[in-house]
Amino acid sequence: MEQREIHTFLLRFFQANQCDILEESAGHMTVQLTIEMDKLIMNRPFYWHWLEKTGGVPEPRQLTLITDQKKADDSVEGEFVHFGSPRLFQIFEVVKQQGRFIRLYEKVRPLTNSQIALEPWLGLNVKISYLADRKKDKLLSLGLHLIRGEVIEQFQEKLEARELSSQIPDYCFTMSTMIKPESGVKRLYSLMERYAYEEPDDWAVRAVQKWKEDSELLNQFYEGTSDTSVEYEIERQALKTLYEPKISLTIENGGLFYLQQKRGG
Image 1 (cartoon, rainbow, N blue to C red):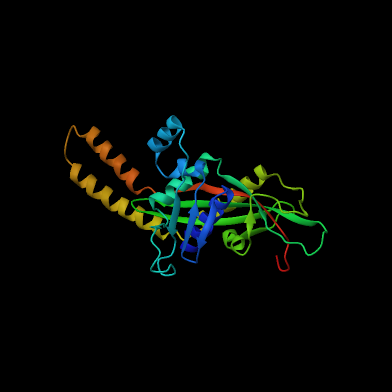
Image 2 (cartoon, rainbow, N blue to C red):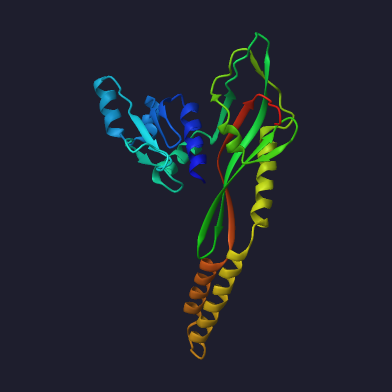
């Protein structure tokens, strides 16, 4: 997951949860958390418990996150967030708790009072994990038009050029879907599975070769010995667990996005 994608994801996440973006650049953002979001991600259970007991005035915190250290001003003090960082993992977990899916609308400012149609897109971000004695993760973002059936890659980047809101704008209406979101999820997941298995398999070939070499050493070690069947089987299974190539797909997050059709897509 690239830093630009992380920046966009965090921005959409906080906007969808009604957190005000107080300051933003290409490399950072400062967010005013809501009470609910403070409780979810700031790890202050004793503060909120004390506040509820005493009836005090809640003061949710502001949070500054740095998403690109090269683009953020040197004067910005905050928490660096990258793929694999505890804060990003925590927010991924919050998204999962919320049902993983959000619903956002493009902010459209009509020049007249005429109604503007917003078209439905399903967006999914899926983590593909290539597992053997080493692990490699890759994030894939796809969007599915729920009327035409069109599929586009790097859907997260498409959203970067749009200003989104959790509320439908005035003088806008949403078009009905021809493809149910549940069916769309299955279709995109199937495409991502195909993508994952069409990737170069050099990592798997290398792991199988090392598995074979270590298995030969194991056989040589136990050759000619007696009463070692249990130990041998345990070690043989351990090598299989370590080296056997596996691919797993995990839906990290996604949502329904109602966007205005623009020339060229």
